[in-house]
Image 1 (tube, chains in turn brown, green):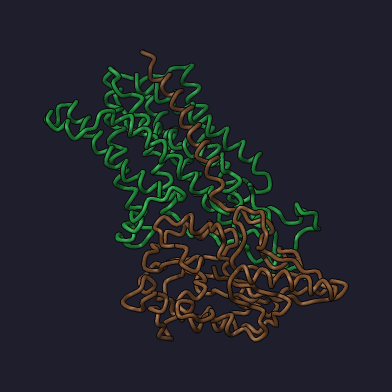
Image 2 (image 1 turned 90 degrees about the vertical axis):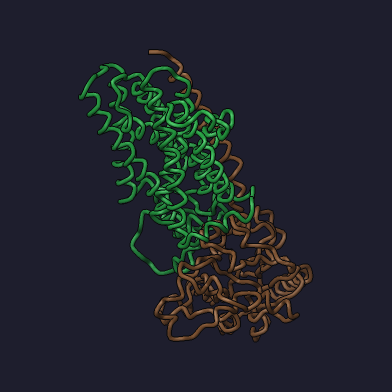
Length: 277
Length: 330
């Protein structure tokens, strides 16, 4: 079971992870647009942006600080996108990572609102003029790198971090973790990473820094996260939901309410249509 | 710095509200949305609308099945035919959303109990078959097809069709509410329930439009059934506003909310309900009654479409509100 431990106290906001991810996975550029959001012109994760460094400016705090965090797909224990996917395109692979098979995805878009972290998104058509200037090898997204991929057709498919499935198969470290110069992004066995993370929290406490782990020993319905984070502020500051909810937990109540409404109306209808005029 | 300021939008339901975990009003990250907005547009809205009417029509057909009056037999034929036509149209609408026909086939790789979309696709496929058998049965009964073709009709086809129809009317509601979108998730009970009621009300309205027969028996029963379904739908929608509280703002407030209130709650529900209730007392006949049916049915159908459109668009607004996403409903 492999995953990421992202220690935000070590992040220096260099965005090497963003670049390495784009480069290795041959993902198209997001264009040149200034957001005005500190140094964050990426804004958010998307179908073609699988690492995103956020810059949290806290200038009115007693001690002004600048928090940086490299966000990524959480590869949840109970993944909303995986449960929602009607085609079976989203699978849990042999490394226990949540992986989208692009040749099976049909672009229905149900995974997009089913992610409580807002990670997965549909990839817009690559015929976007912005992308035509560069000859992208979209075959890279396909495991065997042979033939036409779903990405090359119009309409798009869903995209998100694969946890560098292809690199892991070759025994390599994911591109972002490899590129990270400060080991803010650590890749490895999740159990080992959790132990390391707990020791790091204690170490920081000894230095007077309050840090918490996000995605470890959680009692939320998504369970523990295979890509978890060490934070020094509450999750909202980093645009993370404090209590993510697994969407499928809403289903029993929904089916019951729908069945009750149908049964009640059928009974009323039965009474109405039975009477003779 | 707690994020850039921008003009308040009715979608920002939680702006300024204290968070549940006791912190002061939560800062957002430059007001960036936490969740991704659903990509569903007019095709999904149309499918929700047509699927609801398709399911409702099959329930109407089963209720009027084996009734003796000529108008009721006409109603059964109409309702079965409507179900079949819509069962053929729905996959086309869904394909228009996916982009290419073969993409629909990917839906049929697996059956996934956890995914309402997977269950719904299979429900739709089986429904199409049963709807075809039902129409064949009806044509045999009317002498338009030879009797030996009855071997193609399973026993109790109309009951099976009504059960599947009820499922199709409701599963879309479960599909929508089994997401992280705060407005939809908050409506985990209301959305499936009012989807079913709206589908039945829409089916009654459409069948009333299609039915013109000298014998008014079926028309009167349809009016009563529509009155019941529309009243339940209206009550559920009003109760959802109360239940959803701040989560409901993208649906019930602002420009979208005003449109929803006037076109769905008013024109599509309250108006047909009032007219149908009056008709129970006044019992108009002839062209006056027919004229009223045409006007109220068109209003009800239009209101039903606006309901689905509002639900989807408000979901996009709700997903864009980081405060609502921080307080994801259980």
